[in-house]
Length: 251
Image (cartoon, rainbow, N blue to C red; front, side):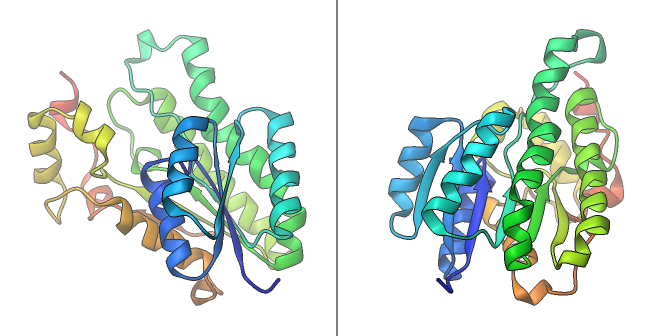
């Protein structure tokens, strides 16, 4: 098969789903992976032909290995791995106990490491691409993000390690750091004060869209980015350049 295959984790909703849709538009086949089986089934059915659903948890090493084997058995190749699955858990340092810390780390950094490692042999065969989804919270410290921000900072450095080590095999590794994105979840939990504060702090004066983040991801996986590796790209409307410590988030 000459048609390229993208494997996307956390593909049942949000940025992952938008990325799957854009890959299809670009003529790729898409393996959609998520641990939320019912939501994944609905998302895959909506996208239809060219996609397949794989229900696995990226924080479980045994499931990770099984997922790669099943994707390869179904598609025969992997040309791009998008490590998008993540846990967004915010809270004060004193209220972040070890179990809460490990829950975030298990998916946000362990999952990225495990999936990338398991997919590396297949990516060597295709001289493929890794794109890890971090956050501007991994670039700048902010309130209530001791576990989340630390996990995303680790993803950023892991990406650089991957680029340094895997480049000789033709594998490119890059990291995308989204800023505030207008997802259903964000709009449900962000108060009007927080929304106004974000708009004031972001140079483009608005939230981003899931599609806008997907555009960066798909570009980095494409041949158009064939000489781009080891890069950390903030897709954030300029927010990272102005800081992320909003007073409205401290209440």
